[in-house]
Image 1 (cartoon, helix red, strand yellow):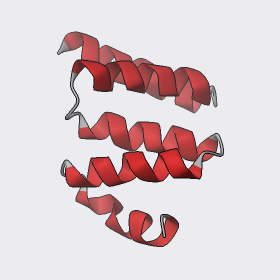
Image 2 (cartoon, rainbow, N blue to C red):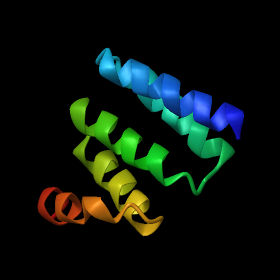
Image 3 (cartoon, helix red, strand yellow):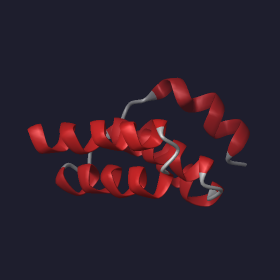
Amino acid sequence: MYIRITKNSRGNAYYDLEKYSNAISDYTKAININPNYAEAYNNRGNAYCNSGNRKKACEDWRKAYSLGITDIKELVDEFCK
């Protein structure tokens, strides 16, 4: 569990630095450790969106929503038509 949290946190640091490919890599590592880590899917979706990959962003946001992050429903409904 510590590794998962560390990967997500480091991904957040890369995201804040606008190093989206590095952030995506760390979020992916966190997801590989725990495929039900909703926050990592949401974060990776944000990084994909900011790097211009709308399709992958929507896939991750839908997954995050299905895993319980319900406050992104409007985003998914509006952005991922």
